[in-house]
Length: 367
Image (cartoon, rainbow, N blue to C red; front, side, top):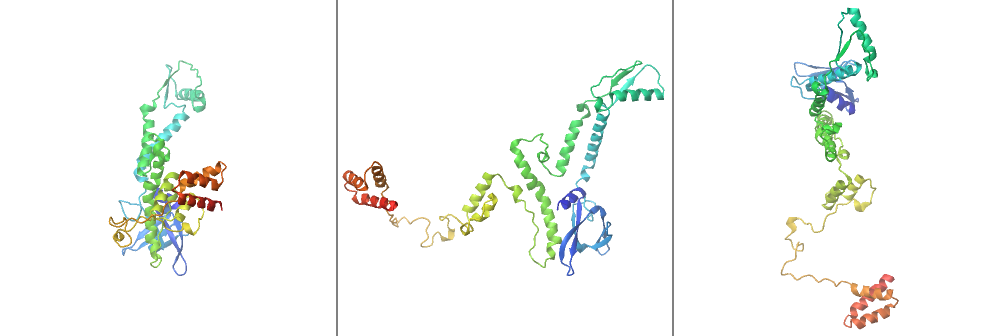
């Protein structure tokens, strides 16, 4: 797949040969480079592919999976994304060649040596070679030269701003990123990049740049390969969930909402956080008990709210927690449970049942 994606981006087209068994079933795919592929269409519309490599063989259109980009000049071949960048890449190449020559010649685009004497061809060559020997090349940068015979050295050097070298290089980079639909900060062009937009820029590579390309590859595979599986539902999909995941906090919040809403199971969320199997209880859907379908709201026996005329259900009294704390405090100060109960009965003579119940609960907890 790496070869397929790279070849398609560079050439605008890529081809795969279907390997078949004796029953004409697909058992594999072999890449076929577009530079060695010749396509011919007969008068009746039949397309034949000829591979010019080894072995030199022709294939029918049903045996080829073609990946072709849009070409305004025809439908037989695809146009590369590099074609609109032809002049941009030529300018970039010229700028790099100029830079290499600039360093090779001691960083000066040109140097004029002047003298009042008349020099012949041999004299001019001798002076040029002598000057280049002591001042040419990056290894002689910053050296000292001595000129003789009334020679005067006049540099004819332009600044980087005058040559617009830096701006042209920056413009070339931005044009390439625009054609390939890649955020500049994703290829480490941080002229306008900040820490806050780095994460979003990297995610946008897969969401906005890679997603259309991957969708195209999937559609071609589904049409030319998936249609041969006798009606079986075979779809090609590239898994990008790992690269589109957010940070830990965002994933945890998202999975919590899905599990609480009954959309996802806890067992489906655990592998995201590298957690093991939690047993059969995690392989179930859970939701809040207060959530009910709208059509069941007015059915008998399942009201969301009690009827205003219906008496409120009786609620069992809560355990006498207050007396349990009081008895526990007295026991902690060295009294027995009997003495603690008598002390509370003296203070609360009308709460005999509650004090007795508190003592029973304390005894049950101790047992």
